[in-house]
Image (cartoon, rainbow, N blue to C red):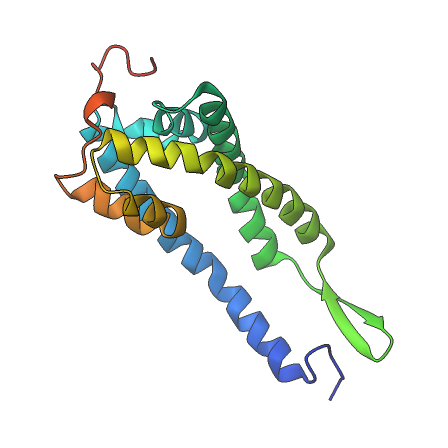
Length: 182
């Protein structure tokens, strides 16, 4: 048995199993996000198809926030949506290269490290801009402040709830169908 960072190859096999389940979990999360946002956009008076367009989706979602928060959220949300399939593709089809350091063996995936670094920067920018965007969304919908925490921690679940429940309508953001990107 080879000595690894965690002590044996069983944990490496477990990590490989979890790695193979990541695309399935990503697909479930993406599908729930698409359905929830589609319903939210139609309730707000937009075409549901706009929720599928990465940079436009972020712009509309952050419509009632400050211009800086809107732009940052839109760009970072779009970047993450573009990088996520690449991220999971590398995770699924890439391979780990063993690197021995002393008595331990680390398993590295260099392309994955590069994509992860870019993804992490976009995620930090999105999270920082998400606070004012989420506060604005909750205020415009007339909901309690606890929804800000829900949107920050469980966004996909919040999207489904807000998409299908009639009590979550962003009252002041509804526009006419001819000027959807104002």
